[in-house]
Length: 462
Image 1 (cartoon, rainbow, N blue to C red):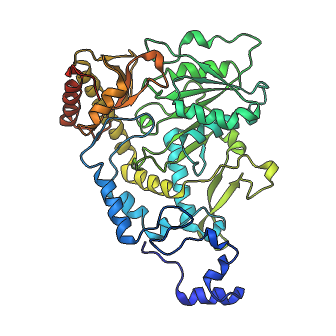
Image 2: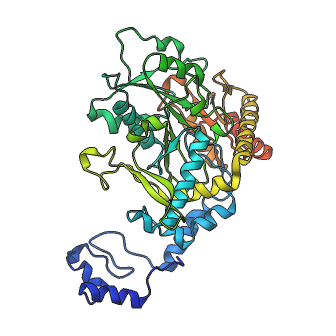
Image 3: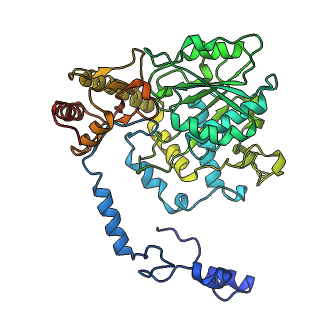
């Protein structure tokens, strides 16, 4: 890492100021048994340490395992083109070592970047404000639900309508975070033919009280809900509306702030598609935007632009709803951190791509996914499952067990999709497949050919 913040003279001056001879003396209270030994030595039965050369070799070996593998999996994490400049700039020492601004006004560069991020994200979602991000899309949805419970004074039930087409991992995380706060998640079933919210489940009696409705766009099956109708229906019944969206999709589709007559009240989701590589599972970041009327319920930080006494432009924290800044009993959340490095990358990514670039990404992804589904559906025994329009992933059913087929495809260097047998067993041998703008016609054909060979094999798939 090229950025080292302190010279040896500066370090010595600080040690002298606090009356300590060496940096190691600051850690004297740590028991000897908990300290790491020299490189290569075991520590209390743990794995031995490695030197730089060994670590480098290990990481190179693991990285080569992904070489040449085609990815057609989605389900909340997507492989998109990332301009080289994004991570070339993000990994500069000034960004790479910067953390959340506790001494905010001394961190003008970080504040400006967050200000630009919040401005762009608010524009993309057609919302008034955005916070400085959260852990991931799942925790962002949980925070959005907590916001609605605090904000919707007309509702006393703490009951949230959440479709089964919301990412099942998100639903699990939300359940974990809200179940001890008296909040009830009421699941809405989906139409078995269309893969969207079943209109028959939207009947609300006069005595029914629901706090909010979650609307996914796209749903986990890739299908597109009638967001305008659902938003107006929820508002007509006294609910707030949470849009849980893919940020690339809303570059092409109506953003949450423009749904129905009044728009959604909150928009949230996973920011990984905005310049974050798959990276074998993370890290990611969650985004959270809302209307001005809900800003006091928004967890995290808001950055504002101002001018100092000499009329120079500057940036400052204008809202700090975290328990580290205000009384704990007044805080909106204790998990409102921002994933600073990921947000840095996404801010640079959105700046480089611009409105037209994001729209082109979304359009090409949409076109490629339809080519993929059309080609796979031409294989004997393979069927496209749902009839609704979809964005860049969809569900197909296979004549063989999905898990076995996916295992066989891996041997041909193809990640064929995601099995739905565990989360949605009622769909049978169903698989979620995805194609972004990165997938070429030749790669789609390679996937189809591999799938044909696996399905044509008369023996049991290994």
